[in-house]
Image (cartoon, rainbow over all chains, first blue to last red):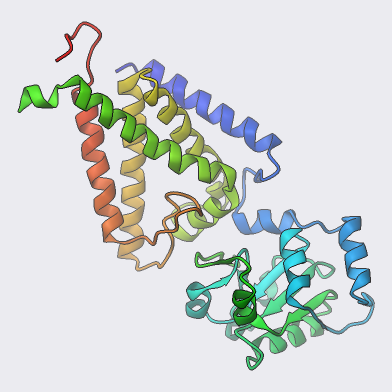
Length: 176
Length: 146
């Protein structure tokens, strides 16, 4: 076995990885985490996102959260328009959650509220288990109190999302 | 036994199998790096700054070495690289199991979700043994075919 060849193979692979990552639509920021990358990739100023929000009759200057339907949430999901937050505990979250959703256990709100990885103008959708779960509403209230503007509540929750056969996941995307 | 292990056809089949495992595993990770980076982040073994770098580079090492191995280029070097990766993955899995962290292994990206468990560790150990066998009995050009 030649050490020189091994180094050349590794070097070639690293070079290809960096070049591909640079030009790929799914490329990551090389020094950082998946959560930061997801947050960076939000289409904050995308015109399409803005016009879609306008269709939902949302007044961005009004400090209140809004309701969102599953088809609208799917639009957000598909176009990476915003962050989807799951306020349930880690156990429920790891059972199943909306693909790409970030776990933000509401019971840890005081601990996590200073490390929220999105901006006050980002579109944020919060969901819970189903219509009867109040964690989503509580988190929406708390975020609005912190002056976050585009906060949405998906009342149907993970149950409705699953019923509509939209993508779910079981892996864990940590908040920090 | 020794002549059986040196059998070129057996070596060829196992080498192709070994290479395909890594190529398959790498393609899904290359196409969806965020999911793989998420898995790496959840392992809690790397500093946050290096999570994405690792998630970007490792699948390409798997892919390049897997492809070269498939086409019989630099067999020993590529088996050494891939087996080295297996050893690292296995140590990480053992760390995850010891710390009772409930995460997906991310071995095949998001196409085939598997939790980290003792079966995954055993599977990796079998692959490491296979890699060692392929390395040890890699035919040289002067070796007659059997």
